[in-house]
Amino acid sequence: MKTKKLFPIREFGALTGVNASTLRAWERRYGLIKPERTPKGHRLFKQEDVHQVNRIKQLISDGHGFANIKKIIDSPEDSRIDSNVEDLWEEPIRKAKTAVSDFSYTRVDSVFNNMSSLYPIEMVSEKFLMPLLDYYSDNQELEAESGFFNKWLKTRLSSRFHHDNSLSNNSKKVIFTSSPQSETNLMLMSNMIIAQDYQALFFGSLLPHKYYQAVIEKSAAKALFIILEQPSKEDIDQLAKTLHEINIPIFVFGKIDKNIENLLEDINVIVLGNNNTIAANIFRQQMRHQYHE
Image 1 (spheres, helix red, strand yellow):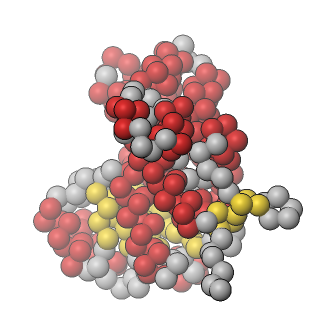
Image 2 (cartoon, rainbow, N blue to C red; image 1 turned 90 degrees about the vertical axis):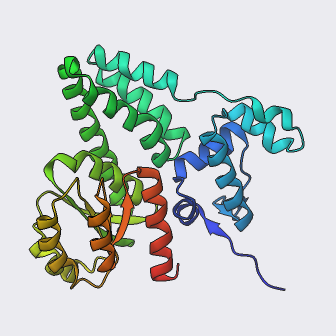
Image 3 (tube, helix red, strand yellow; image 1 turned 180 degrees about the horizontal axis):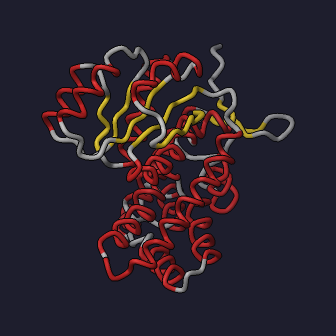
């Protein structure tokens, strides 16, 4: 008889894009997943659990709260429950804005910690952090609040980055680089990708492209992740000369003109677009394909 594949929680988290602490919360607080256990009590997940987690993520994305998700999972035939949706992010965003207006690190942290314990980091990024970043960048009269929020976010992401990165010493290394104005989003993307069981080599804006190849060779990195924001054709022409010689997967994220996108794809660069969640999913799929995971 063929033995079924079982995944320990870290491997399962990398497979689904949901970190271990969130998976534990879904099990303990809501009973949404029911992993098997080793004799020592460690969680083991089945292939069917992958489909269950993906369904939970979709229901959250559709606006269902956890109580309603539990009802849907327990009573899939009751279609009346499916119409009960809500804006899960409106209240946390309101609380975060109020905390920022009071310049309270503690309260902003509290809202973020609650969100990141219950939802995948890519979802927290798309539904919670990015709307706040857009809100403060679009409101020039909130300059002080914008500075406070951006500094809080960089500090918070850096703390999470160093914590998660320290747990991934044996994981595949990914080089992260960007222009100075994109470093906050680069840190956010690196956090999302570390959650997929990779180790980040974070250079930000401090790695000129002429050094890419040397860093790749010395670090044995398995991928290069670059954020480009509206680059000129001249910039791309210079960059392309360097990227053309690199033989690991190259991912480019950002708002990129279609003509430049075509130029990048001609040298086998994987263009991710500028949606964090979609980019993280494409990265995960491409890396699995590349390294037969």
